[in-house]
Each structure stands twice: as C-alpha cells, then as structure tokens.
Image (cartoon, rainbow, N blue to C red; front, side, top):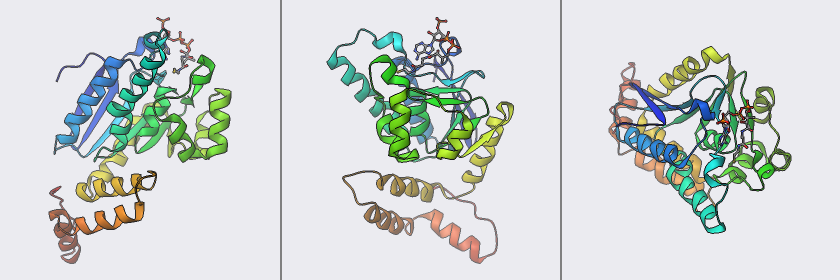
Length: 260
Ligand code: COA
C-alpha cells in the first residue's frame, strides 16, 4: 500500500506507523486520517503483526493537532461531520482494534495529537514531549474524543482545568497524572516501546484482544463490563491459544501461541 502522509515499517511481530508531515508538525489532515485508517485496518488483518506502535516523524512533534487550515471556514454541519468521521475512522477505530496500539509520543501532542495518543491503548513519551488540548483557544472544543478520554485517564477536575486553560503539561506532570506510563530519552523512545511490544507479542493474541474488549467495555455506558468480561473469558476456553498456553505450562515449556 502506498501512502503520502504516513510510513509503515513492518518488523514482525511489530509494526511502526509514523505520521510523516514534519513541516506541518504532523498535523492530522483528513488525508492522513484516511491513510492511518487504511494502514491500521491492514495491520489488524496481518497475522504476522501482533503489536502496533504509532509515532510522529522527527523530534519536534508527535502530532500538533488536527490540521487547522482545513476546517477554519467550516459550517456547523461540516464541523459535526469532521468530528464524527474522524472518531469513526481513527480514534474509536484504534481504541477498539483487536491488537495493542502503543503511542510513542516524541514531541508535541496537542489537540487531535493528544486525542490520538489517548485513543491508543497506552502511552510512552520522550522527555521533550508536551501535551494539551488547546482547542478552546481556537473557539472550539476537542472533537476526537478528548472530552471523554482525558477525564477517564486523568480525572475530571484535572481534565476540566487542562481543557479550560488550553494549557500544556510536560512529561513529569503527565506521569503524575497517569497520562503516560513511561518517559524515556528521545533517542531511546522507539526502542523502549519495541521492547514492551516484544513482551506483549509473546502472549496470546486472542486473549489480548479479548482483554482489550473487556477493559474498553468498562468505559462504555450501554454495556456491562462484567458481563463482557464473563463472555470473553468463556470464549478463551474455545481457542487454540488457550490449549497451547495451558499445555505449555503443564509441560514446563514456553508457549508458542498460534493466535487462533
Ligand atoms: N494545523 C495546521 N498546521 C499546523 C498545526 C496544526 N494543528 N500545528 C502546526 N502547524 C504548522 C504551522 O502552521 C507551521 O506551518 P508553516 O511553516 O507553513 O507556517 C508549521 O506547522 C510549524 O509550526 P509553528 O507554529 O511555526 O512552530 P512553533 O515551534 O512556532 O510552534 C506549536 C509549535 C505546536 C506550539 C504551534 O505550531 C501550535 O500551537 N500549533 C497548533 C496547536 C493546536 O492548537 N492544536 C489543536 C488544533 S485543533
């Protein structure tokens, strides 16, 4: 697949997806959102790939937001469509992907950039990263899930303040808030994420996808997370991964999961 705005590197069992518009600080225009959707959809189907890392090109920015030049003259209807399409194609799509997606935040993660990182399953940042949702400084609000995921991750009061002030936090604050799991030097960021990804890739992909589904269910209003967990737990018993995992344990050897 040929892309203009992103790079996809396959390093089985990992894939690194890099948003590659450094001159615009990797701002998310609609073309980039569509390309990310197509790339992630293909990676989800690729059985050789077990973990996906998303990062931004060069050291300055992960993603400096949605591309402001694209929507500055939008109508009410177009604004609503922009948010709905973006959430469906990218942000909710990532959150519900059945493979783990790690955000490697290598610089500014602002607006849609922080929303993208928050849609990922967890986040690692480099020391120079700065994060915030500055939309109210532009007369708009976060529209790619930021008003929902930021309070889920850092608490309602902190999210209110960060969104209302349109401020930015550094990595010390982000760690304290639980917004990112780890902080590394810039030059070690990708390697650090790859090492976590390799640990994840040793485990059952089927069980991991069921865990993602069950964890996400706890944050949805229309489903009971405990019920989803019970069903997902039961389904694991019908998989080859479960047979392999339990047999390997009893035979005192490392499991080699077929992913089925
Ligand atoms: N949308 C469109 N273009 C953007 C952008 C965005 N969200 N963020 C940065 N860019 C572009 C700039 O317009 C500039 O393009 P130009 O060279 O053609 O003029 C280029 O990226 C470099 O950005 P610049 O502002 O010159 O860099 P800086 O170091 O002075 O400032 C930031 C860095 C991140 C503080 C600043 O770019 C910024 O505030 N960006 C917008 C953040 C934001 O509000 N995001 C939420 C959007 S809803």
